[in-house]
Length: 440
Image 1 (cartoon, one colour):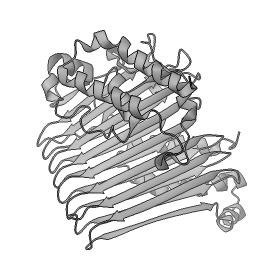
Image 2 (tube, helix red, strand yellow; image 1 turned 120 degrees about the vertical axis):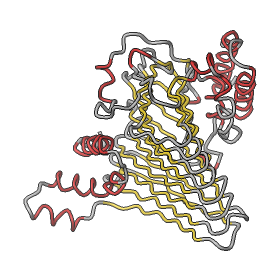
Image 3 (cartoon, helix red, strand yellow; image 1 turned 30 degrees about the vertical axis):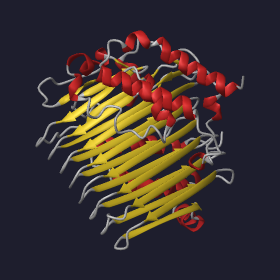
């Protein structure tokens, strides 16, 4: 039997082993889990023969029998402190190896709306998440999202009530301990912003161990009419980790969603963002930044579907690559026949710090309307030697000059983050990476 087929059997066996646990779940969720497992079994892991994965091979994941991570004890606040935003006083949910950990979390019961774990809501109020959970994600086109739906153990739910505005962001922290090699977690996030609401969510994925592990995450964001959502997603896994993710966004009339995706960790990373603008006057802004070195591989893939008139979407993704690292960007803007007056822009810019680093980029437009304003572009370049020479002539060392110019390349993305603690944290992480020797 081929090795990949054997690994598929591993996930089927894991799914069957969870049959007893599913008996306690509502029927609608069991049906969605069964559907997800069936779709994953039919399609398996995508290969480089699929155009969407042409430059990213998932073979290092597909050939390994990843087992669902076991519950972990002994993780303390000191262990995860580097991944928290202590200056932010909003609610915090922490998940260790895919399971909600109350001792590390902090929830203000006076806050209106819902900030809790999926497992808690399934026990107490399953009807509140039935219209959304595992219903919006594009599982048929994304078998890894389908596998998440089948196997996720727990996840986070953030529901912002209608007509409310939350000042402080909600922190969602997903920690992998990597106690055992070849363990996998399937984190799930559901963000529901009801009509005329406003709120922010910080989603962090991190690892404490150095043994190989796989994080396969799905985030669903549903923005009702006139809702405002600001979503920050930081991937800070260990360099021995594999990370795959899907962020699925559905927007109602007059809604506004902004996403900030930042990838610093992981050995092999694939991030998908799918946006559907379902009604008129929607606005979506997608910002992405990754800084990699050594032999890291990061693939960002976006898809924005304009289905109605008078909507706008703006994408800016930037990559900083050193050593033998590799970056991939694939973006597609779809404008449906009814989506007149669309304003869509997509840009991918990359800075190579090493002659051995490599980037593949492919922005795309698919337009079926005639009254639109759409554009896309991509650039790949190196440090401006004249600018570096200018800084050095003012007494700045060569390494410091290169770091300053590299930081300047990413600065406009960081400045778009409206919460100062988040912006400062990302700036610090970026500068830490820039002063480390690349290509090692």
